[in-house]
Length: 197
Image: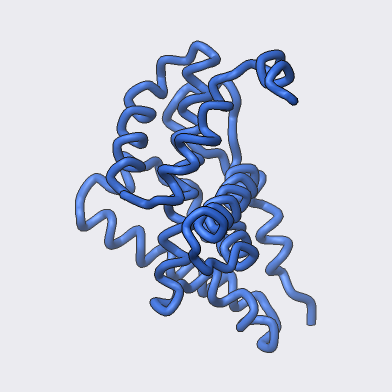
C-alpha cells in the first residue's frame, strides 16, 4: 500500500501566506517553514553557545519544518481572523489538531512515531515548542521588515506589533538574535558584501 504523507507535504509550496495583504514578494508555507527551521536552529544554537543551555538544535529544526503542516489540509487562515476571539481560536486549534492527525494517518503505522511529535505537540517538549513559536514570530517580523524595505507600507502595523510581541517574550535567545543578527536584514546586497571581512 502506498503512503500519501509526503505528497501532501509537498503541497505546502501551494499555500500562500499573508493572503489578505499586498506582498511585494509572495511567500508560501514551505518557504516559511524552511526559514522557521533555520531560525529555530539558530535560536537553539544561541542558547547553547551564549547562555549555556542544552537545546537540541536539530530537533528544533525538524519540529519547525512541520509546524504549519496542517495548513495543507486547512489552508492558511489570516492572523486577524484566527485570533479574532476565543471561540474562533479554539475552533481553529481543534481543526489544526484534526488536520495533523489526518496527515499522520497517511503514514504506515511504524513511521508515525517519527513524525507524531512534530504534528501533535507533547507537553514534554514545551521548551522546544516555545523556541519554535519564537522563530515563527521572528520570521513573520522579518517578512514585515523586508516588505517595508521594499516600500510596501501594508506591513507597517504588523511589523510594529510583531516586534512588541518578540520583546515581550523576554527570551535571551531572541534578544540576542535581534541585537546581533537582525540588523543585517536592513542592508542591501551591496552593503552586506561590503561588510565581509
